[in-house]
Image (cartoon, rainbow, N blue to C red; front, side):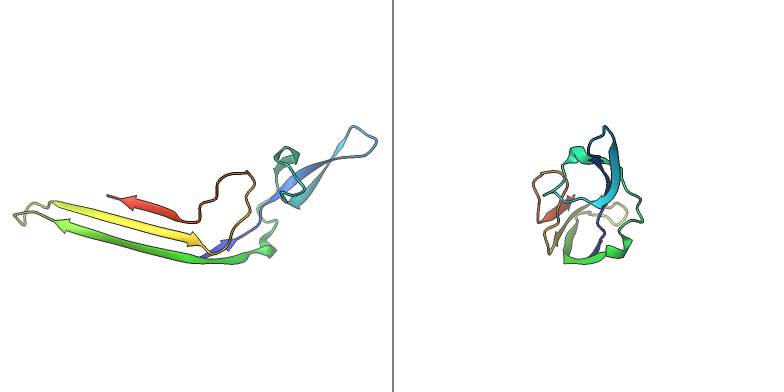
Length: 108
């Protein structure tokens, strides 16, 4: 699995010294400097296209199909599927949430 990682830029508010005005700058969010309350809005999507990186990972998928019909005219079947994927690197996130390394989906 190969994913593309494009950083998201935000319009960040900065207070202009000795005034009651704010200045808006487009910056990549850094959780060590900014807080979510500093964000004015999102920057345009085209901002950060020159910083796209590839993020390799693993992807596995499997399944079983059981047919238990006595006649060919009627199909009785059960299908079970499972897929897993995991990124190879930790990604930074804006909100402090639990980061899951393995994403699993099931299908019956």
